[in-house]
Length: 166
Length: 435
Image (cartoon, rainbow over all chains, first blue to last red; front, side, top):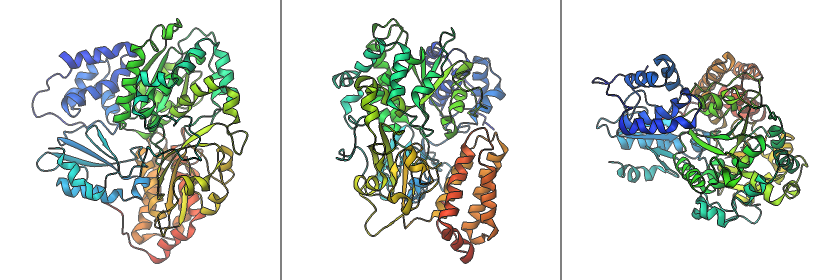
């Protein structure tokens, strides 16, 4: 389910990343509750959550790898495989859909050279996926590029937005 | 287009008064606007006094269910010696709903203040604000505001010198609509898959970490400071139709209106005026076809039902739908309703946690039947099949996700039958599906 790295797994939770995790301990009464925040730290550090990271995290939080895998795969925002340098999420649920979101999604696929939704462009620069409701229905079409939430994206505006993400 | 729009004379700004003011996001800016006075007042009150004030205000849950807030708080045990928790539901993900996002990004301190007051009332030292992972901007703004509240002694071991510990922890979700369901949200905070839990036990008995918990929506909690400051009688006087629907409500309007955005109305405000006056009505040359008034989980309304509908809990129920979250999706005559209902069914199929058979299978099956219909391969018997499926998805599962999938399907077939028949009878080819 979760992908493997091409080289031996280097521990994520050392130095500054470990310190960030340890700073979270007092906020929760048990270790298991640290799982979602810890997975965010993994993704922040590595860009995705590998099988090796899952095993490492399971040991750190006194959980099993199978348990962690079950949680990772439940949530759509954790990447279980490497993605492009910039990860684009475009909302096409009904409220945006009736305002032209599918055209924006098509334009994103075309302009990034991804070829299809869910795939990465050959240059490794972009991955575009379609997501369900981003909760900004009054500003169609909202897209997320990495952590940047961009509202009111139109087909004509796609190229200029992408240019900001080398 | 978009927010912040200038406040319309017909709006009743309470929560939205400071939307669009960047300075209101800061602690100093919030205090300058009278912030944290309500918390000071609440600190001097006994917990039951706070609960009684909220009860008297008539405030009801703004997340969708409309349960009386004061009553919910009163279910929390007293003197049980156990830790209590408050959860704030900031997992706003219901299609059509984008009102909590405005509170989170413009007036985060209103939410923090509301949480702190609720914590005093239900005797909870710890509150988790569960914010959906996609809300990157609101998350950073909220976290900054929480940090500032700690730095200024509003939160912490001795909140505002009260001798009471009030902690607020912002917890990010990671992409799952179902985590907006209250018990799924608790599981998610606990580091589990976001599967809803069977009730009872209800959260007030055994919620987060198995301990007494109250969970409220962002808008509900953000409404509390004004109630404490200005009094329950003032809040209860804000009503235009039903006496059971008091106060103001943020309505997020999207779709085919000229001015989509978040509007704050006194409950009972005429839906027609909301759509035509506040939101500017339809685009030129277009007419209204349908309205989904409370987020995608509620039945679709016809223009005739909108005509004299009061926008409050009872008024919309009287027209066969629900106020829900106040996420209003307006569709004009250019809308392919069958396609949009399929798209909503696909949303629920995507978001099902897959725990219950009727939901896991039903949402996917419904989607497939609608997709087939859109592909020009619909059969006359498909409508009965969809209704049968919907019946088996309503009231049969742990949570209401599958009921939510059935609502637009059933209301769509009953109220817009001709749209479905057109696909079935003319084998209209699929023109818009797929990217």
